[in-house]
Amino acid sequence: MASQAVTPQSEDFSKWYNEIVYKADLAAQSPVRGCVIIKPYGYEIWEGIRNGLDRRFKATGHQNAYFPLFIPESYLKREAQHVEGFSPELAVVTIAGGKELEEPLVVRPTSETIIGEAFSQWIQSYRDLPLLINQWANVVRWELRTRPFLRTTEFLWQEGHTAHATETEAEDETMQMLDIYADFAINEAAIPVIKGQKSEIEKFAGALRTYTIEAMMRDKKALQSGTSHNLGQNFAKAFDIKYLSKDNAEEHCWTTSWGMSTRMVGAIVMAHGDDQGLRLPPRLAPIQVVAVPIYRKDDERVPVMDAINKLIAELREAGVRVHLDDRDETPGFKYNDWEMRGVPIRLEIGPKDLQKESAVLARRDIPGREGKQFVPQTGIVDSVKGLLDEIHENLLKQATEFRDSNIHDATTYDEFKQIIESGGWARVWWAASNEEEVRVKDETGATIRCFPLDQPGGTGTCFLSGNDAERVALFAKAY
RNA sequence: CGGGGCGUAGCGCAGCCCGGUAGCGCGCACCGUUCGGGUCGGUGAGGUCAUGGGUUCGAAUCCCGUCGCCCCGACCA
Image 1 (cartoon, protein in one colour):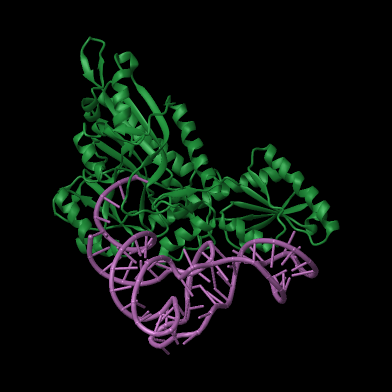
Image 2 (spheres, rainbow, N blue to C red):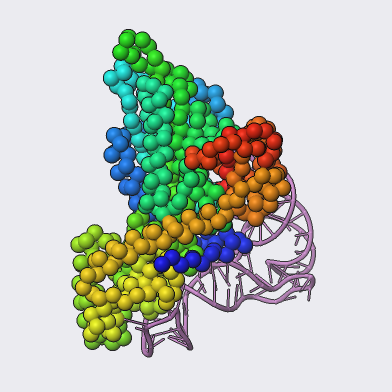
């Protein structure tokens, strides 16, 4: 059933990526460098991501709230690692209302600090815990180098912030949210992500431990697609988030934070796209089926439109997102247009289908004639729904096979370098210092993407230091 | 900030070397034609040639300065 997708011409993958993003109408360039205008079609994909995540957050007892865009500069400074990590990329407001401000305001790069300050006031007793809050917001990070969706100066995301009574609860929460991200990525975005833990060097500024889901793009580069942090008591201590326990003892809370951003839109483009353009995962696609009527003469038009409208009504009734393309263009033009935009299924009805009471379903994941099939008009809902699921499975399968065939084990540094140079991911036993980790990055451009959670067990020898190693690391070049 | 490159119509570019008053493709508008895989033909609208100065009878073109943008690297969801 699965057909291998056309590989994007990776001699210049980022050029391909930019072209798709703009041609498929996901985004437009903004007047300010590094910012991006998200156009309606791109925004609808983001809304799909939002809905998928929000549903899961609600199901696990989280509530949405909203915190201010501006954060007093002094808040950032309360957690030493945090400010060190973020200060190079802050946008700061020093003048407002025509006056120099007494204290500069930082445009939030993330909200641990201001939410921590709020939590310290909200939490008094163990009865107030756990406190499970999420916010949908924009944040600003003045990055040196930007790319639409993957890294923009301003981006949209959700950031969850929770406070717990015990270390165990906080760790459970951290892992639960990581699982939710992975479940979403795999079952809705059809992106097979690897769950893992970040190294000391790569972890979030101020966190105890950072967990991540890592995805492989079509150029074999890694993309961190979501993170979940166990903040330990670092922020609780910096912001005085304390509670009175059952036995009347004052304790610091254990907090977590976790986020997924509009970068996910870029991940979908880069994980599934092919030479024809986007291939959207059916469960997230704003348009799941595009209906294209085909007729030559006016007397053909009416019966064709009647037939197609009837099918559209049935599909919509069943909850399928259908768009009718009745533009005055040639069919070939429309086919290419919607293929560029990645619509999973194209439904065609023409004069020849009328007598046979048939319709054509063309699937986006399999290009050309092979992806076309004739189906009876009766039972169109089942045919379409079945096909949408099949397309999802196929995209996931293709991406999984692609990923697995590009992860290689390395036992020596030479092997390692060879794997990285060819663009693949290197899987290695790891027991070496931070300095050695940095050295590998300097020499090869690859970083530890994560220590995968499903470790093989046993022990091995570190390819770099020769030390006995208990854990495995995945190295790759990343976005 | 280091290394490359580029600023000419909405977008992509040619013209510059060798100065003579601006052109192509796409897109856009209108007419006809076509429509089961990006139809074809015609007509038309649209430009301070990034910017300041200099050389010259004359500068998109040559010279000097300034500004902006893109790509590669360092930073990162």
